[in-house]
Image (cartoon, rainbow, N blue to C red; front, side, top):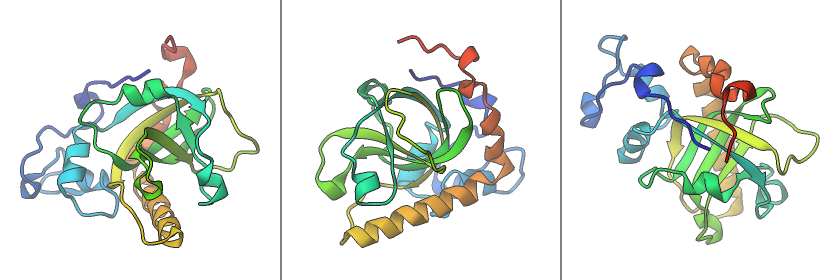
Length: 203
């Protein structure tokens, strides 16, 4: 299930041109709302391309992954089912995103999400892996996970060691928390997409 409302209903961003020409209304002569989309990272071709698809709404069943998140990285992730991956727009940039998510229509939490092949572990399978910034008492395989990606952090890349990867993940989490604290994004916590009774779960 994917659902993307008209961009004009959520953000007042209307034009993306050259990086120096990025602008947003109603904040005159300021790029701050645009920069919030990209966390603490500078705008580049990846982030500008990603902004074209944001906010991105998707939902799917939580399925078993490789288990590396909890076992090796200390960062448990919920893998979305293949139908959610296949529903991604063809040109949706691979990388690390941040936003909000909820499980089976319950509380909405901040999240960090990776989209693409895990190049660090030489994986050729494209996945959507979501790390919710909340401590759960148990796994929730088979649950319906709803995700709204709001900002882009970085492209998928390889690291020299597992330790460097873990450090990068922690930076991603801190950057996500910082960006999501903005009122620009906080209003998405109450998005109707997260309400079971108002979203079509068919399919």
